[in-house]
Length: 270
Length: 336
Image 1: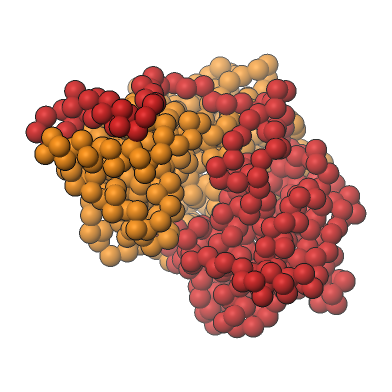
Image 2 (image 1 turned 90 degrees about the horizontal axis):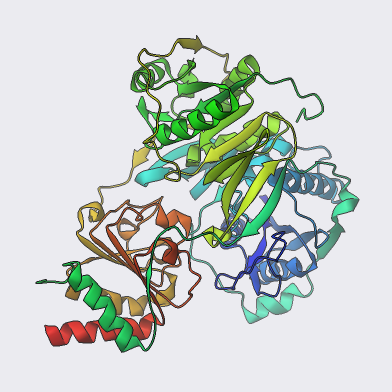
């Protein structure tokens, strides 16, 4: 099976985020990492390949620094990588992002000699995380399916082969699930926790250096999807609740916290 | 993708009201109330649409009886139940072509996230999702939505003329101001043609009964990523025992298999409202907050003073949980 997994580089989970004074974005002096749900999509792709053979291509759209997550994907076992390099100031909405990725997949197919004009550029399966931890649009995978003319399913927790297609388990709210049978090619957005994540091995990191990582400037793709939405300003949300903040040495914090709980009759025997 | 030829929209707003088995989604009324307020301010008529099979739409319409609406659309077809994106896209697309609303509101549910982006794309627009506040500026709706897992927020506007597609976060708007009507709204039935979908969808199901019903717990001690390792859970467990609380967790802890899934609080786990919710090392991603923000007293311990959990906490302790929790245990022990 030929699988492409779409990854995004986002600020590290505990990075201190500070909006720029003009509200146009955040200060970039933070650490970055692979978007967590995307890491699970990569894990699923690698396991599919280990079970049934084929190829895993890791793809990202982002500035130069985003190559780091592709090297990580290669070290974990992806066969090759595509980096759609965007200018640092680019702020694409989900539709523009999906349009660019769709164009890159179709171009990849014609350059690698796969069936030209096939819907997903010769890929059987397109995977991505269910949302990014930065913008949180949760739309890129779904829109990629639209642009490729493929069926999709979101928030997937389990995938197994069924005939010539797949049977997937989709998460609904409140502890409900739904089972879907779908033909290939298809686009799936993956929920965190679908499998345990692997670490890259030393051997993998070494081998990754010899794996192909193609960089394609965004403007070369010739995609002209205008942004349909514009961010006016990014800001730190106003607090609406009055919070009693406790600080100081730990024993002092602990004592004061318990005083509050006792006053609210929340301690055993109080 | 026909952005080049936008058809003129009508002076109406439309709400896609979600139902399952004929029962309205919990957030249906709050979304309707928010849409009513915006439509009234803009001078738009507000209509609602219910998609499903005939039995479902009939039951759901009755649940909307008292709601002030200009019209209710029952968009029905056997292939709309159970939900499958392909069929819903055809049905919703047919309704939009017929009614041409200027604003199209959705509940920001998993179902909306599954089909609304494609629906908007077919109209040459992008859905503005997960909206938590709305204000009008001239003709435009300015939408505030969370960014960076709720640590920041941002205002968005559409850059293209209507139609505007937007989904409202569950719990962000109040249903208290829902306008009631003396008489039920007129109902119209639309039965679009829907071919056989390529994707075959099964009925929603629940896994084996949950062993723990956290929604009945009086007190909950919940742990998040800040606990770092499975073995550190013993610390939280001991504190929970001394407080007479149930132990719960945010999603990453259950994903790692450190606690069973039935201990998970949040949008994909259990929704709880105990008298005490003590959050240890939980940053407060929105998916977690929706599952616990109705708790009576929320106390949070987190080393990051900017963690979103402090936005909704009554008592916040900024510090190392590996120092604070042992201190809590030691005091409780002395008071034994």
